[in-house]
Image 1 (cartoon, rainbow, N blue to C red):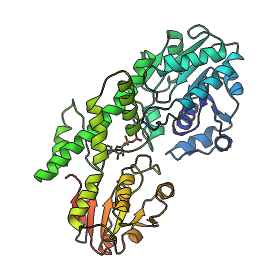
Image 2 (cartoon, rainbow, N blue to C red; image 1 turned 135 degrees about the vertical axis):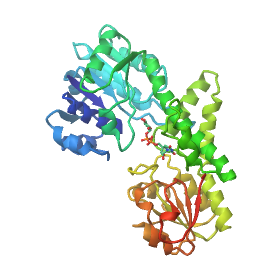
Image 3 (cartoon, rainbow, N blue to C red; image 1 turned 45 degrees about the vertical axis):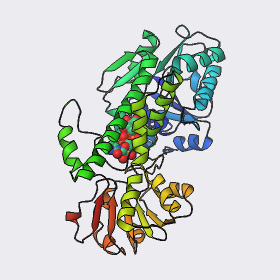
Length: 431
Ligand code: UDX
C-alpha cells in the first residue's frame, strides 16, 4: 500500500522505516527541509537502534521525503499524523502541531478525488481524534468523514532505543477507526506482523495509550514507595519485588525502584491524562501521587548525600549519568536534572559524565563541569551520585579509588559493592 507519514521525529521516522520494511511505499512529510534531506540521503534524523540501516536500505526506493503535502496525499492512500504533542505550561497537552498537520492534510485532501484515510499516531488525549482532528479535516477539505475519507487513531507503544524492534514485535495493535472501511485499510498495513489487530472506537484507542503508560508509571512509583519503606527497615526491596513480580497478575517488569522515571512519555502522558480528567471535573488522586512520588524520589539522593557527606557547599560532587535511561542521548525529564539543580542551589561543585547525553545537558546547565570519562569526573570527588543505569558504571574500581572520598550513592541499583576490587562507601537510594 502507499502511505504518507507526517512528521519525521522519533515516532514518524520509525513508523516510516518499519512500514517500508513491511513492503509498503512510504512518503515522509516534514516542514523541516534538513530532516527531509537526511531521510532522502538514507540517514535517520534521530538515533534509534536499527533505524539507519532500514532508512539506508529503503531511501529513494520505498521511502522518499518531501515538504509538499499535496504530493504526499495525491500519491498515498493513508496518512499517519506522527507530530509532537508537547505539554503547555500547565502540563496539559498542546495540540497546535497536530492542528497544523490536520489543516495541511485537509487542504491537500480537498484537491484529491479518491478516498483517503487519516490516522492519528501521535499520543493525544481522548476525544481529540473525533472532536478535534476530524472536524478540522472536514472543514479544510470540504468533504464528509465516513463517506469521502476515513479517520482512525492508532497509538504506538515504542520504547526509545528499542523502537524498531517494538514496532516489528508488537504485543498489541489497536486501531480506533470510525468505520469498518477505515479499520480494514489500516489493519491491512500491519498484515506482515504476527499480532492480531483490535478494532475500537478512536476515543478508546486514545485512552488505551494513556492507561497503558499510566499503569507502567504507577508500577514504578509503587516500587519506589515500597523501596523507601524497605530502606528504613533495612529490607532488600529488590528481593521483595522479585517475589511480588512472580504473581502472574502483576508481572515482573517495571518494579525496579530507583531515582524515578523520566523520558518523553511517562511524565508528560500522566500529566496530560490528569489534565483531561480535571477538565471533566474529576481529580485523579492516584495519578497525582504517581507524579508526586516521582518528583520527590530524586531528592532522596540529595537527602542521603547530605546525611553522609554533610554540608554540600564547595564539595565536589560527581554525577554519573545524565540520560533519562541507558542507551539513549535523551535527557527529557531525566531525574538527573532536579538533582543537579539542587546541588547547584546548595553551591556544590558539580562534575558530570554521560556516554551519550552530555551535549544536550550543556544546554540545560551550561555552568557545570562536563568530563570526557567517568575517571575524569570522579578524580578527587567528595561523593558520586549514580543517576543512569549505563553498564559501564558497574565496574569503576580504580576510578572510585581515585576519589577524595569513595562515597557512592546509587540511584539505579547498578553497583554490587562486593564485586568491586576496591572498598567504597556504598548507599543504595531505596534498598
Ligand atoms: C516508555 C514506554 O515503555 C513505551 O511503551 C511508551 O511508548 C513510551 O514510554 P521509554 O520512555 O522509552 O518508553 O522508556 P522506558 O524504557 O519504558 O523507561 C521509562 C523510565 O522509567 C526510565 O527513566 C527508566 O529508568 C524508568 N524505569 C523503568 C524505572 O525507574 N523502573 C523500572 O522498573 C522501569
